[in-house]
Picture 1 (cartoon, rainbow, N blue to C red):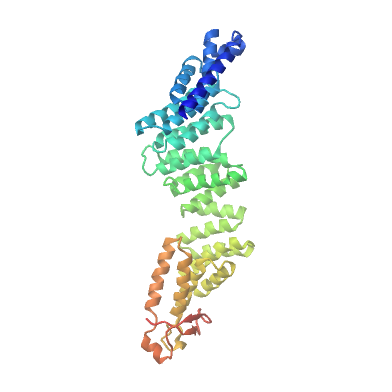
Picture 2 (picture 1 turned 90 degrees about the horizontal axis):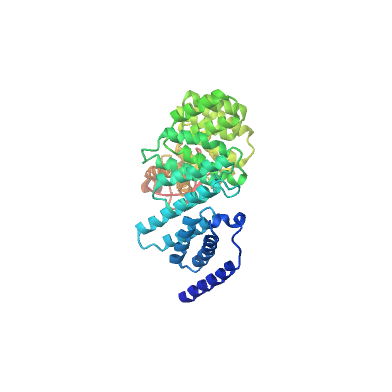
Amino acid sequence: MKSVKFLLVALAMVVAFSANAQQDFSDDRLYGKWGATVEERESNIGASNYLKEAIDAKDFKRATEYFQQLLNNCPAASQQTFARGVTLYKNKAQRARSIDEKRMFIDSILFIYDQRVIYFGDHQKNGKDYILDMKARDMMKYCTTNRPLLREGLKEAIDAGIEAGRTHLDIVTSYFRFLCEDFEYDDSVTSDMILAEYERLSPLFADCAAEDEQYRDLFETSFGTSGAASCENLEALFAAKLEADPDNEAILSQAVALMSRAQCSSDFFFATTEKYYTMKPSSEAALFLAQGFKNRGDHTKALKYLREALAVETDPTKKEPLYVQIGLIEISSHNYAAAAEAARELRGINPQNGYSYFILGQCYASTPCPEDKVGGTTVYWAAYDAMTQAASLLKDEPEVLKAAQQMMNSYRAAFPPQEQCFFAELSADDTYTIKCGFAAGQTTRVRYR
């Protein structure tokens, strides 16, 4: 089969040579870029045709010879020389027999892109930004272990895109994500560098299309979760921006989101967030304020904003997190009646929200029921049931899951002993309805300690 392919290539070369021999290459306007003489032009045009045929036939040794001839003799003749050169060396990298050999071929791919920029960087359609974008995408395939080189390649592509007015937001997001990830272990990546790049690149997402919102979210998440996005750094960044443009809603929104994610609690954070909330009341802004005041220990103010947002919010999905926060804050303040009310409202909106059971379980356990003839401990059956359900629904939140499991253990330890149940005429696994407290009316099962 291999010999057949070579035969076809050879035949194609003969046909191409015959066709070339019939052409007049003396016209400098048409063929001057292929060589100084008619003979050179004929040879190089033939080599361009043979290069494609050799690659198609996987005769990479012969293809390499043609590519080198074109690169040495007439690099500015055709962009196809470089496009085929990249294809050639990708094939060679795929077939490399060692890591060093593969690395050598990858270096050749990057070199070819750089040479193409030199000779065709000013092309109106497929110029520098187009070439460096392709190079960046190949670097994300081949250069993942050399992060400084990868970041440099992506940054060059972004800079060229900004200059040409054709930015690719997926490349921007990837570059910034790598930069933020490398901050943890690469000393050359500083917080000042990340802040500067965030400030430089974030405007690119200002008017992004709906299909690009995912990239904006990833960009913001990368910054928000990086060690560089400390409250101190964020305050310095946004204080300067808001001093220059204090009523800019987009900047206020950005500042509130990032500082809230960093759990800031400075006076600047509260002043900025309250200003944004006044300008644009929303459940999201109320949650930011509530979280901030909760971190500060000011539960009264936290609840104020949550209940204000709840009073005007009509979307059930946006009411959900408001009820969660109200319930958690009321529980931490030992206001069990208010916590239970919020939890029941939450359960009514979404029965699969584990926080409703997490809150209700604690409410049930908070009020013993002396009427049950077993020392008021029957409420722990209902509390255990609720917390078991919470644990099954909160598996993706390890800290809350751990707390739920610990409370389950403490509730189980508080079950009445068998002897006490015997005298109260309660048998194991009998159905039982709680008579009082926040669990009143809840049906559960009799269980012994």
